[in-house]
Length: 179
Picture (cartoon, helix red, strand yellow):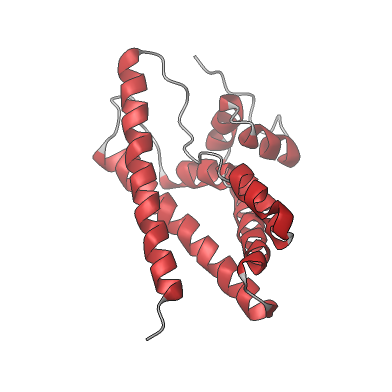
């Protein structure tokens, strides 16, 4: 059983590093603290801007490219969050699932923290490493307690990965398409 820390016991950087380390207690704390919403927004914006700067390594030059890739990253985060909410809370909820949109956005917001490392994509030699490090799973469910929980967790990860892959293909096609 995961016991959350008292609300506000961890500062912003502690939460950021705890989320990056996939510490379940950190996610429980963020989920329970409505005041963490502003912090989650900061993490998402930093991650999106870092993706915009990191995309310069893929040939995007100038402020317009940085802004474009930042907005695309922010929109992808928003789409991913809504898909996660629909699947996890409405379509495939567990019997104990109780979550509102605010809780989910806070946890997924902090889960996007490793995306800040995408800023290193500007350096060609570091691009691949930055993308790999930033690709930490963004699911924020606690660890499974039983074999059935494990099977459900694996099926959700597989489904989320498939949806994320489809979204990525759509985004790449739209970016490469020149009418």
